[in-house]
Length: 213
Image (cartoon, rainbow, N blue to C red; front, top):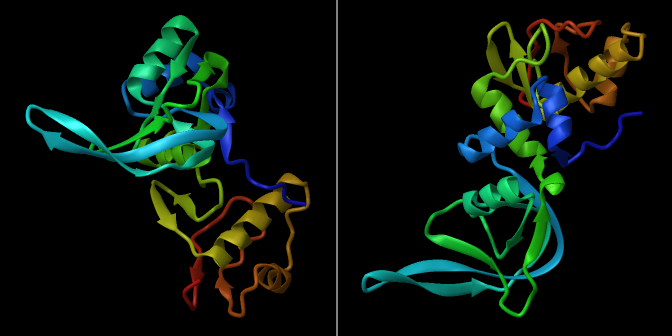
């Protein structure tokens, strides 16, 4: 049985995966090469845009969301957390410098401790792909959902059905039973066409399909 994929990881988990000390991950984050986040539940917030107003900017509210799940931390908050062990966070990072995401004035600030810092799966995979981060002696060869695999020195993108076949092959190999029936693999992946070649071991060669998946 394949377990559900985790959406986020503690720093210690990522450090173990990358075989580096946790402090290196913190340094990557301070250099804004890697984004750290904190998990929140039911936090009242205000989202909006910054509009020029004379020599400064005014906050123009657009939405009043309730935040649940991982929220990316800005550099200022992260620096305080790493220096002091915790911080009272009233703002989270957005993907655009013209926008903001603040904890609502009526709500208490979010107390974020150092051991609560997390890395989302999306951010972890982005970092590994961008920097071709090596995992152990053979290097990283797939992302979390197997839609990106590394063949020789190049990354290639797979469709959902192709990725499902590769994922099942790897699971079979790790279970000590790498021999898989090709037709059964394709049926389990929901594919009505042949994927060539059908590899029978976790050591995978180039995969091709007769249709887009």
